[in-house]
Length: 135
Image (cartoon, rainbow, N blue to C red):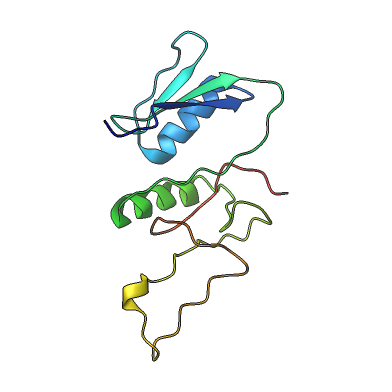
């Protein structure tokens, strides 16, 4: 059996509001309360369990989604006027990070694309960090 990530506990200042907010952005089902957690059901195999915490570190999480799903998520982020950035740390630059082309598509005549600022590529089509505060 392949190892799969089942759930992650996501520290939040308000677990219900945090879960509702992310579920709305991802268009994912969620539950207001399941014991000490407010779960967001990201997929059939992954649950993000929001838990109330007073102190916590920010973390970068990258979801693999289709182009259409990403465009819909980004539209919801823009509609909510949520600041975002193209890298896990730094200023809210309101840019998205697009990955480098696949190595097989590179030739000597086709240099790699330049990413905005010093953003590092993510293994998905795009990266967007709408929930983490700027550092």
